[in-house]
Image (cartoon, rainbow, N blue to C red; front, side, top):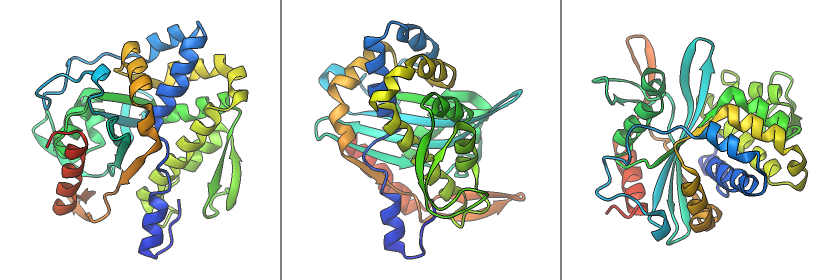
Length: 308
């Protein structure tokens, strides 16, 4: 989303998407339909993808959802390609603390230069998914932020169009005109939404602008997903979710989170990486984290997870 040069207004716009997150769309919207519609059980089987580890090595004790322990979630928007696993186009980390009914959210710039855990090398963080899938993305994100990641939710970015078409389109508020997309409120089909979120080079904020448009589309998806008319399209929605969403959450965990953590979705604070710098290494551009800013974000997330 286009942002004016004024820094305070820029920060205000970045914090505008603070009332919902994709994880609560999945947990509240899908779980609601799972409970009331039998076909949902097969969808759950399709989206559940176990991982090898039982718990994060950064946790001294296993979390107990019934006791409302704070948890963390990695959201991966994956740009899959033919004959290629693809790369994680969007990486968002949520920490959820039901005790104070709050959620913290941080979006990691996909070009962030960091150690790729398991390969003994450094590269762009979004390459971790291409090298080792969900588990390498988890390990690399944990290493960067120095916090445990308990759950992961993967959304195929190309699957945006299937989900949006199942919802009969979405409406977004475009901040500036580009490539046939007018400024103001516009209604998008699935294919149009995919073009909308992928545009980068005409955006004065580059990849950061694209991340904001992705969040805007996700917000609109959630708004449509909880509308009354959506219930009539649930077979198409289940089909789209089954093809495009993967998570290591089991059904019991979804139910526990829906019951014990949902109030935290009403109070979401977005933490922002904005002080880093660009650096070219070997002809490739990387985003280099500001060490002080990274340390401050780590501290906030650890405190929110009650790890310090």
